[in-house]
Amino acid sequence: MEEKMSKGLKRMLLLLNCAMLGLGNVGGPLLMRLYFLKGGKGVWISSCLETAGWPFMMLPLMVSYLYRRRKEGPGTKLVLIKTPVLLASVVLGVLTGVDDFLYAYGVARLPISTSALIISTQLAFTATFAFILVKPKFTPFTINSVFLLTLAAVVLALHTSSDRPANESKLQYFLGFFMTLAASALYGFVLPAIELTYKKAKQTITYSLVMESQMVMSFSATVFCCIGMLFHGDFKAIPREASEYTLGQSTYYVVLVLNAILWQLFFMGAVGVIFSASSLLSGILIATLLPVTESLAVVLYHEKFQVEKAISLVLSLWGSLNYFYGEFHENNKMKQKQDTETD
Image (tube, rainbow, N blue to C red; front, side):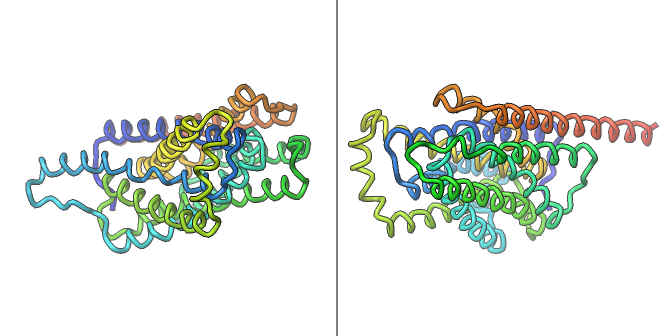
């Protein structure tokens, strides 16, 4: 059961979460690639950073608690999450940790402009799993949008080998390619699974509960990745990497901290969009913003921009615009129907 709130408040929450998702979705991959380009080698370190920013969630949760306490009095519960949602969040958190590792491995091996477009296939996986798990309403605009965004990734895949860095073998490159594709598929499952958790929860789903659930997921993912770091010896490697980092030791730690912050914004924005709208919209926004990441990678890191990438970029933008036009069209139809029923 979802918390009742005004349309204005829900729209404001949606815009806020879209902004967080956008900032994290664009900045996170670029900073992660910067870590690897300038001397970083820890795939487990990078995967851990994707969710290590979970303590930052405590601030908005405390603000939310104080607000609820002012409205409800001294008996206000500090923690809202109940056992079923808690357990589901832990499982989804571990899956997110696996996804973090797959994605970090891909970013370590591929140019960010390539990995960004591979990740755009996530929309097709999100749409498929959403159809199976939560059965959203698919309009012709939605189907067309999914087709165009998927086609954009396929076009990219037709000419990927020219992107292979000089110091990498074909095996390493293609392993990075398929690890990124696996990360896309796994997160395409996680997004609808989060929406299904909200629908099946035997408690009112409030924004505070969504934040608590996300913190549990991030914590679980971080524990999973920390175990990987421990077995791989990455904790001991951090001081050595910092001393050898091309941009300097202090910059190394700044890159790590900013990575953690931006990725936490991404994950919080993603679940916030699911709460305010749907997992499908969350997937659409991620796919929409990937061309921005790709373009910035070309400008900042001087990556190649072949004809295939240009075509893929156009298809991605076309698909995204198609989706949002469809949403605008459907909202207008619903509004006209409501006006007719009122008259």
